[in-house]
Length: 586
Image 1 (cartoon, rainbow, N blue to C red):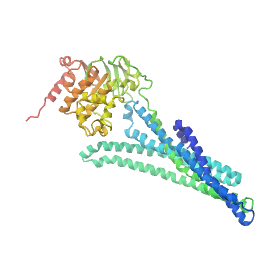
Image 2: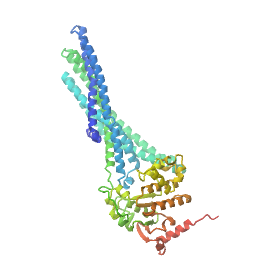
Image 3: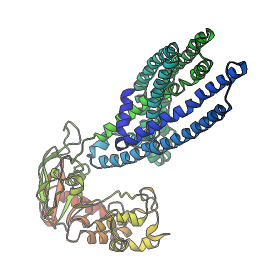
Image 4: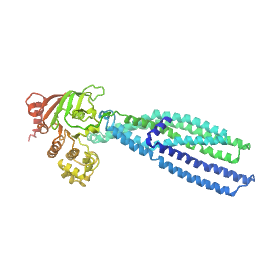
């Protein structure tokens, strides 16, 4: 429990001073609550002595006592306000920065990280689990620290008034600590299963939503729900297991304090009955017996929650500790933008087995267009991804402008690239901001100019709110051709010296294809261009064509040169010519 407490304090980072002073305010707030109890006990004893004729009560003491109680009440709310201002927002402030840091981590990891870790796991850690930490973290620190600090102070006060009563309180606290330690151990043992089930549920729901259309089209909606139902059952079982483990230990914790409270009263009653203790002390001890443990009685929830938070911190640290693909990279300005592959080998498997690419060597001079063709699964898109260092090669080198891509930071390298993919993703924002994503500091006039050059301005102006129209999640409010032109406008605005086109016209209709080809011509003018395509019209005018098969380059040359020789390219052209010339036989 203490270890997790320390970790949360460390997690507070630069806000630790505020956390400390918040705890100080909480400490004095507790004493502002306790002080009126002592004053009331003393005043009640004076009234009783006055009634019995033992001593005469000075009326001014009544008013002074009441005034002191009012002062304590005001102090309590003042310290409560101070604590809330200092401490309550720390979790939200740290979590906000944590999410930004996680975003920075995720954009610097290799794409293999997302193949090895479920999207739902990452999503749950960055949202649900981090949300628990930001809501509960500071509360748990305050509850545990102030619970035990205040208990220590009250026990010291009890030692002054009645050492036996103080010993009874210490005995109850010792038994409670053993029970809480057991709660914490049980929580640490059982919580990971609950968190894993939570993450799996997030993944299952994401997959269910994405695949619902397919499931319905095959009439298998119920089958698609089965994984979710199974995960919900596992989550329920994990949470019930935690509660079943928590309940008996919590009973021991609470019973220990209740018995200790009875012990404090008994230790006070015996000397009072013998006349060895003043009435006000007896009354104060009786009152304290019901409040002395109030702070630490609530620590039972903290002990369980600290185990929960400890597991969340483990997952955050694991996510933050992901290996950066550009660790040690530098910001390097380039004078040239030619691309070279030298004896490159690459496998998606961790152990390097089943190589996707092997012995790949070629060069693309600056300002030229290189088309990459080949069968599906031959490694075409992998070559493009390695240029942009989405992955790292297992052997050989990839160089851009004469520099190994491993020398760059990701941002520095990718500032030289614009990419237009077959599957376009647009953010759930306005058309304007989706285009401006290519260059965030661009003016509105520059956004419009890029849209015009991408053949997008006409349809954008026809949208309900023009450039300020929301495109929906993933661009769902736009057609495939419209999304593609927005993507090209974004790339035009970035104006990077190297352009990668990965099947950019493969999924658009003929009407949109002409517009997109015109936009691509504008985008690629004067650039180093890498085209991955199947359509002959896209590749036959390239300065160089690379034919990839079986994970390596088997042919290279211009369209005419490759047609003149036997091989994969000629077969590819023949097949494509037949496919593109096919008609209905009416």
